[in-house]
Picture 1 (cartoon, rainbow, N blue to C red):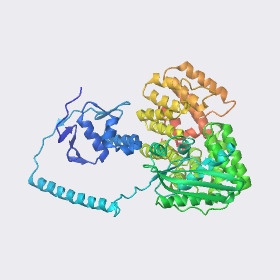
Picture 2: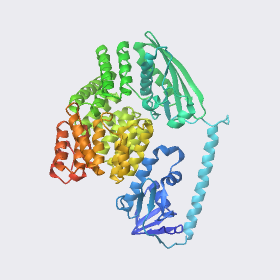
Picture 3: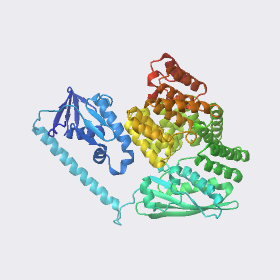
Picture 4: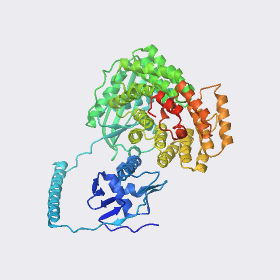
Length: 611
């Protein structure tokens, strides 16, 4: 039953007293530090005690319209800080209750506190504040008038965010599309070196390849201030690109230029274009390594490898990218880019297709070679940081390389996501979700970044948000089996088994990966579908004779079926093969039944976690 909204002023609940006019929260007479957004949320909840305040209302009243992309993380963090201040919890709420998929409700009983009359000193203070406000307003008007200048025209708003759309190939040969996409990718990388400029990553930029949307529409969807578009042409050993800079809000052409170089000077061409863009957005281009000449054949192989890697959907695609990078390195053994691409391809192979011991040492060797040639290569630091994290289990070394990757290129969305992954596995969930938000802002159409974001919420045990984020991932790709299994895991944790089972229904071999099928078995077992779960386990065990199947995921299914001993044996096997899933030992809710077992605690210690 809802309570009556108390009158404005002071209100008491439990040991707390809130002055809603001054924004001061006291606990037994002592002031409690509460930041602005958590305080605003508390005040709004107190306006409707006992009733649900939906998330949309909180968003409209607290978060400005132009920051909606950060709303999920902002609300999650603010609610967490509010509960911390109140000594409350989501599991057993005394004050703030989470209403799944709807919003929040204040559940404690309220008491009206005595209202004191303002004395003369208060009135004098209020008059002084009014005077200061008048002075501040006058100064603001003066600055506004000055900003219009003598022409009477407002100064152009600065450009702080930008997207490079896919360069259009003017070649008649469709086989040259990889070259145009590769040139787009490299131009994005160079433009990303502009300080204080948010640059949309290639995955989201390539989403608009061949689109008929207007530039203002694209800019609005990507939340950027400007767009770079252009063409690329290649005739023999000559490369020509023409690019133009468009201001998004009014579709105004700001600048255009054509660049032409021999293929061996293509890196100089890209560098010159990035420098000119930096000049026209009035931001500083960060220092980078000296641009060197390239071997034309090697660079073409490198671009082909990048094209294959970015579009890879199978083991064969990744092996093709490896072959292209190796061809580039055979032509130019001094190519740091070639080694970095090779490292990234090996990393991708380890995710689902091959045993970690077979490919991750190769990834580490390639990444270290790239950094020997060029220490300032963000992609190489990212790849090495990932290997140190998921294979070496060296948390400090991994963090060092991932932070260095971000320092060198703050627009490296994958590095932000990898760092979020590391933070999540160590239990630093608020920091992880902030990094995840940054990754998504840079690459809003990346399926893996969106799906991972839901998984980080799952590991943080905030299952409502995990469900929301995985639904967003399925909007990007309704056929994403990984997204469905992550979503089903979150449903299962909330005991919403019918919804969980609906998600994992189509997840079967051979269409889905063994990891996704094993996760499905875990969900089925938790939902009481023991026979189906055991059948999936049997199918996966037969598959192990043909290809790598992650023992960690098999362990979670055994545990969901109640077989603790077999689960522990599979986890030990995962340790021996250095499964990349072992990074989740510390935080995975599926492993909770084992946490009191000394053998599990010993395993955590060997991996490098504090039990």
